Image 1 (cartoon, rainbow, N blue to C red):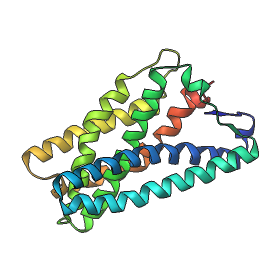
Image 2: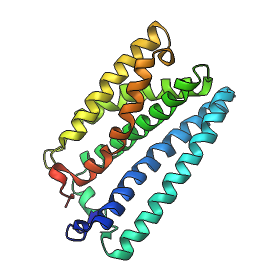
Image 3: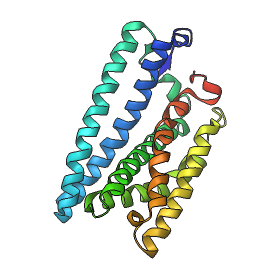
Image 4: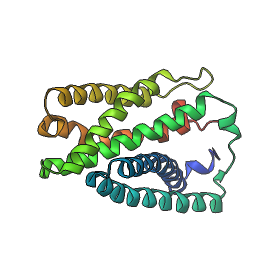
Length: 216
């Protein structure tokens, strides 16, 4: 995915590019999450998985629609050429970075939404389950986000910071799951809500690369 840096100097097109990157990443992450929920529902017939699948399927379709609209606007303005050559040049590290970043950002959004719901309704079973699944993704994806590096494409400090924060949040959440229930900790719920917006913007920094320059 290559953007014309001169056109991105226009605030309106920069916003379109940011929306395209962000919601494409969220669509990838939400799509994977919905597939997992579907599999769990078919395997266990647990009602909570069905409710979560319904909720996050709508989030997936919304993200996909916004990404498609942003892509159309970017192409029409000549700010984006739909080419994957720049990603392919960094095989296998660059695609891995982008996928892991998308999964981590989606997990952060799931954690933030679930924590916000649990703040108001601590007994909501499906939100508690979603929060625990997001904690598991933090534990898996955050170390991968830190570890997967490409010497030809330096990692923005925002990415490293978000991944480190997610790893610490995952460890904290894992400890709470072992000792009691993470949904009972108001401090942990607040941390998840606060981290959500910052983590969700990480894919933008991942796409644009070090110093905000688009990958070429």
